[in-house]
Image 1: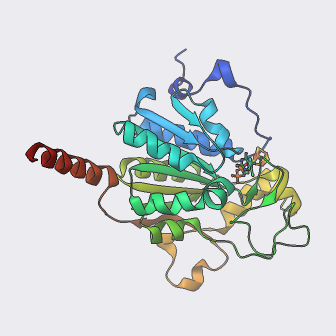
Image 2: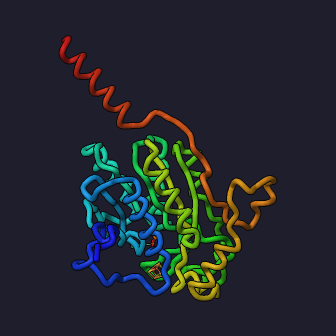
Image 3: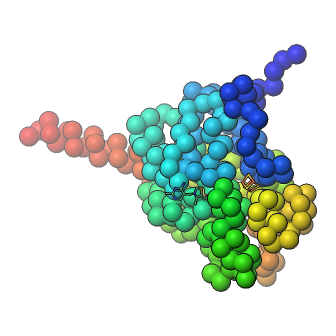
Length: 275
Ligand SMILES: Cc1ncc(C[n+]2csc(CCOP(=O)(O)OP(=O)(O)O)c2C)c(N)n1
Ligand code: SF4
């Protein structure tokens, strides 16, 4: 029997079984990402997957390709180095909401502003999974976390709006329920040159789900199914209130950093030659 192609991208013998909790959404996001890579025609040695630290950031450890499991919050600076040293590689960053938006928030906005070609997949499970369910910048106001036993007082922010405002050329959102849709968005993001973001709304049944009495993983997925609305269906801003807006939220054009950088190097070298 022919081995399914997906196994060519997974470190089956070295790394499985995985450490994720039963019902966690991270495996679904990884599945969508690998299938998007395969459908984009990319071979293992044409990609580099970079992460920080967190449950989501464990993904590169399971992928058979060039992978880089770096420091908490520092996936984007590491990915920037990889991309500038090896512009031929397709660089993909996987990050949790704590990693990308709290400790790594500054890197995130400046990478979007710079518009270096990379795809960031944000797995937003609304809390810090790996360290026990602390609140993150995406924890909604009023929800419970280990650091918010009486309800979270802060407002959360929307990573997609921030990325767009900072200069990302492609921004999209889906959920771990809408897995085929998610795969299509990741494929689009990979294809697009420049800084691209795909936010994946994901379930952490062990911590966020339990602390907020949201039910098991199936109940959380049903919530995503019943509360998601495609951006194409929104006729009035009120249609989006209380909903998870999914789809391509922004698709624009801007000069890509490496191309501009190359041009500056070319000019500098030409000048040196003339001196
Ligand atoms: C500099 C530093 N600060 C804090 C930590 C501890 N730490 C590890 S993972 C993590 C949070 C993970 O949450 P998130 O990024 O949302 O990912 P998830 O586990 O939910 O996928 C923290 C605070 C660390 N490893 N390094
Ligand atoms: S703690 Fe949450 S995010 Fe981490 S593996 Fe378990 S369910 Fe997934």
